[in-house]
Amino acid sequence: MTGFPKSPMKNHLMVGLNANGNIHIIVGTNSIAAGRCSQSLGAGARPILIGPDTSDVDFGLQRKINEGLVQWIKRDFEEQDLFCLGRDDVGGVVDAVFITDSASHPQSSKISELCRYSRIPVNAIDAPHLCTFTLLSTYTDGPLQIGVTTNGRGCRLAGRIRRAVVSSLPPNLGAACERLGAVRRSLNPMSVTIPGEWDDCTEQSQLLNRIKTGEDAKERQIRWLAQVCEYWPLNRLAAITDADIDAVMTPWSSSSLPTKRKCETEVEIIPVKTGRIILAGSGPGHPDLITHATYKAIQTADLVIADKLVPSSILNLIPCRTPVHIARKFPGNAAAAQKEIEMLAIDGVQSGKVVLRLKQGDPFVYGRGGEEVITFQRLGLGSRVTTIPGITSALGAPLLAGIPVTHRGAADQVLICTGTIQDGKSPIPPEYVPSRTVVYLMALHRIKDLVQDLVYGGTARERMIERDAGRTLWPLDTPCAVVERGSCPDQRVIRSTLEYITEAVDAVGSRPPGLLMLGATCHILGGRSTHPWVVEEGFQEFMAHDGCTWMRG
Image (cartoon, rainbow, N blue to C red):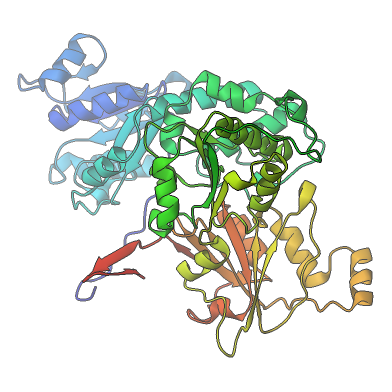
């Protein structure tokens, strides 16, 4: 947009203040003052109203005064009020001041100046230049609070945006926050082991999916709980029950699973009615990117067993009548969870159900789809298994991020790798080939070690082996990109080089699932930046016009 001067204002630091027991001065007796008193009381503070005696007092405010919730000092504001009406434990200094008179009122600018000089937070209605803090348009549901601000632009959009955000949320999300928070506190009562672990403003660590050795039961359960909060759809979280939590948090092993099946190496012919199993890929995440065959399977299945990475936008396509089981594949228990999935599918088929095994991406591209087919074949169910391909995120996500995996003159081959093999071990990294694009899946949780392996050959001993083997190491200035939640509304792309990508991920946090791309094509369309890394937020959806559909860039 041109023709308008760019605003010099900086965005505010959005914080949540613990105002419990604070003393707030509210200057004025109008309806705005009534609202400020309610907000102050709602935060556990004690509001003191200062203004001349008048009969024209807001009805709700007068009721709070009559009930003793609000103290009214019936006179004009005086400078000493700032230093004698506050709490004893801070020398009588008040905690905050709210000016509800207009900015043109003679005392408004004077009060603001006094507060600024004394470093007392001050808010003035319709006068951003007199404020050291502003109030947000808020929504509260128990412990859950959502705030929207336009940073004093006065465009009247904050309330509307808040309503739009809130209307998209499932009911009872606040109760879910309370329940899950109680579980978290019971597992680790504020004995912080990781910086930022209890902080709402920190992003997920890239270690979320890392397999750790030597974890005790509580550490493992804490990470499982984090996985539930990260991967379960919000509507499922909002309806979570104590039984759901027990099912997720109770440790289990292969011995706790049904034992009626024979050894995997033996073939047991299971009598089947008319049931069948469908292994289907749901694509990278956007519902428009699933195949028509997968959509039909979603609509007609009797039971859906979904991987935890299948996003809510896909799960929302499942009819309400259809039972859904989300795989409990958390770090350290993948084998037992896989057994559980297979048994649920087999039991469903035995009872004559159409079981949809829903996976993200393509079921045969690092989706363990082949392993599941072999298991069903050994049980005599091979003829009952149908596989439906999906767009693998290894190819779809780069395109949606504006990164071609092949490009004439830059990349004539593509290699898809995994960053983690069986039992959480690290695979042998590929050698550097200038004309190759490498796409790593399941690697962000160990990106630091991976970059070390690619660039330096790992440890001193490993470097000696690599030198003897003649593997070409990767240059530090190799273009790379991290693409997270491809095609989802919160898609994020981090463009950098191997020299800075680990630092970039540490700085902005992790937003799984994601992939790492290496090679010249990472910067082929957007060009190289002069900054160590660039972060691109959001996915622009698909647009339809004249019968055509494309991605809006």
